[in-house]
Amino acid sequence: MNGGPETRYARTPDGDHVAYQVLGRGPVDLLCAGYGNVISIDQHDEEPHVRRFEQRLASFSRLIRFDRRGVGLSDRITDGDVGASVVDDIVAVLDATGTSRASLFAVGGSGLSALRAAARHPDRVRSLVLVNSYARLPWADDYEFGTPWELLDRFIEGVTDVSNEDPVPDVDDVRILAPSLGRDNAFRDWWSRAGRQGASPATARILLKAAFQGDVRDQLQVINAPTLIVHRNPSLFVVEHARYLAAHISDARLVELPGGDHLPFGEGSDAIVDEIEEFLTGSRGGAATERILTTVLFTDIVGSTERATREGDRSWHKLLDSHDAMVRSELHRFGGREVKTTGDGILATFASPTQAIRCASSICAGATRMEMEVRAGLHTGEVEARGDDVSGIAVHLAQRISGQAGAGEVLVSRTVVDLVAGSGTAFSERGQHELKGLDGSWLLFAVAERPPT
Image 1 (tube, rainbow, N blue to C red):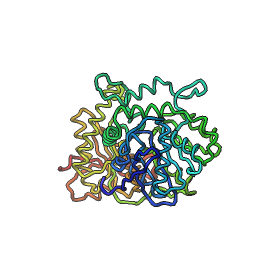
Image 2 (image 1 turned 135 degrees about the vertical axis):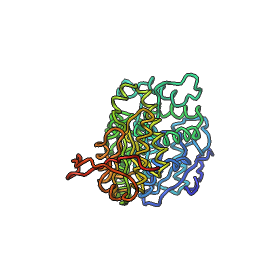
Image 3 (image 1 turned 30 degrees about the horizontal axis):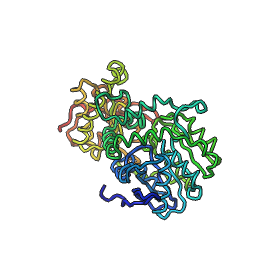
Image 4 (image 1 turned 90 degrees about the horizontal axis):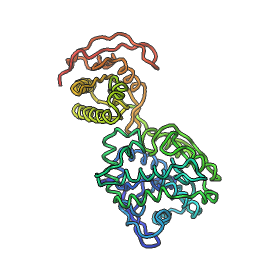
């Protein structure tokens, strides 16, 4: 990606090349041991959620990321212990970057490598940050909260089988690993493309199996590095994995956070970074925010729960995908910016309230053509922009206004009506409403006729 960090190479003891990049200039050296997948560092900055997550880490650290051997820009896997080879990769990258000691950050199966490194090279590891990680994943007689091997095998087959002749059903790795991004088609496209480019199916299978077979329980007692263990509860892996780590590492602190994402850069990512920043620096700087004036649009599908029950999961998800594609097309047409999906609707912002009204009306009309009913709410006000997300009273107000709208209706606040005076948009008054969580009563208006496009 043009303008991104420069890729350099470290040399392992057996002569292999390991690609790495450095972001940020913070006082803390933080080496990312991986997210438990095969996506190359060269692809990270292409995805907004990943880019923002790592930019926040780099805001208070010198973030070092690398491709383990077998992935992306690094040399292929050679014979030997695949799991142990990552420790050599870590040490080689530390040497190449002139880092005497670093904090290691890892997610999921990559936590095994970080734990091995801390056990074998205590002089090089200042501290550990483990997110949704484990010392062992499969079930065993002495590890009864582990995952049965038949489920792990099914997952490996589902994400590495490219034959398309007899695909493993019900293995949707995006919905499993990051439910909050399950309906984000842009993320899905990136995830699929970056995964294919990161490793061949055979290599991905080897690396996944190594991550699932790893067991470092016997090394935990020798780890003296201060350790932060963050676990989303509920998540893909049961919280007992994290509690086991906390109970068997001498200087460990466990933080359990709400949320269902296994990957840390989806919903609730700021809470994870806040914990990491406080652990490494002693304070929370928080995500950089700015207040901007914008028009906020909320839409949602009327009767979505009943429709989903009637349609069944497969048909309903197909219908939702079509709905989302239609909404995104209208947002592009009218200059809106998608902030996020909300399950059965969408949150977007606009520089122009008139364009927001036109877009909302076109979305409702498009839904009707699809034999669906959508309602929309609009308000213009100041919001807090934090990365790609927005928050504040104006966002809550637009959401509450949407909830008051009828099927196929676009409701707006008095503020919007005043701002678009002279645009030719007609409104009908809908009276005063008390909106949950907001003081006072609010005069609302419905778009009386479809504005000109």
